[in-house]
Length: 384
Image 1 (cartoon, one colour):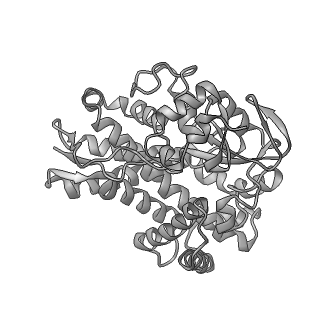
Image 2 (cartoon, one colour):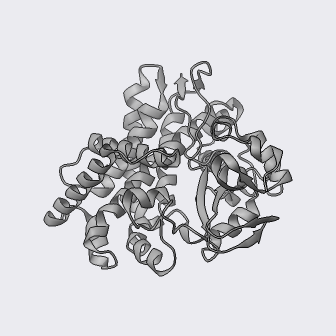
Image 3 (cartoon, one colour):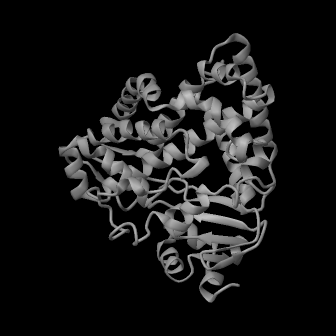
């Protein structure tokens, strides 16, 4: 079942410098049993898309699913009619027009404000000074939880995120996570009582969710909005600053910002993998998968599939098929907040590009994107 190559793969390899390993797996065994993950790893784009779209064969409904363990059932951990029931109330809030009308002015103003705070320093670490604060401030405004400041949201997110990642590493859920979930629940209830949040009122008035499901739904939005958006912004900044020729082009032609963001999303998805579980025995991509097996889809590998993307490891904003990346997932579990996430990233990158024509990266202290599940640079130090 296990080849020598697959047996040599470790979580550390996939977290730190996975590209050559993923390339070899994609070429020789695109569905490989990885003992260190106790599951299958899918690295070819067509196979990953097939698995994403077929919830009858590859499901998220499993007691091992980490988000399920922390939050209980949510649209992240359900399939079929129950998934649709949980997802439906979110639709109105995340439509493209609704996002633009409700957040465009705020986002560009907030991004410029954050960048202005470091402008005179002539040097800044962009993940912690721009990417993270913009993500947290945006979701705080979006949720409108009564009496909640960005610092509260960041604290809850940190405790819940740590627990979810810890579960993937075999750790138990800690008291800090349980307290954070309970606190969010209390703030949701208080906010609903006074009618302070348009988003929460919309969830409740839709009627699809029960009262006890509103807090987990809120946390799902909070978690996705912070983790993935911070990663998207930090990754895009890192890619642009690390490619001076592209950076200069985008500074001179602001209309290229969207293409640069899409190419960054392709090269380095903020969420590198998504997990599924086989609902039955099946032959898939040359592998015999058994019912109940973990099947991990590598978005990172799928986005660098040379059968789809020419010179896949290059940062090329002129690709004609940028939209074929699978960073936001396809099928029933496609990211519902992708329009807001893109707009946040556009606002942040546009503001950063305005720091000056001599904008560059301090490569000695900046770090490349890393992470087994969530990928981003821990440090993106720019100077201008």
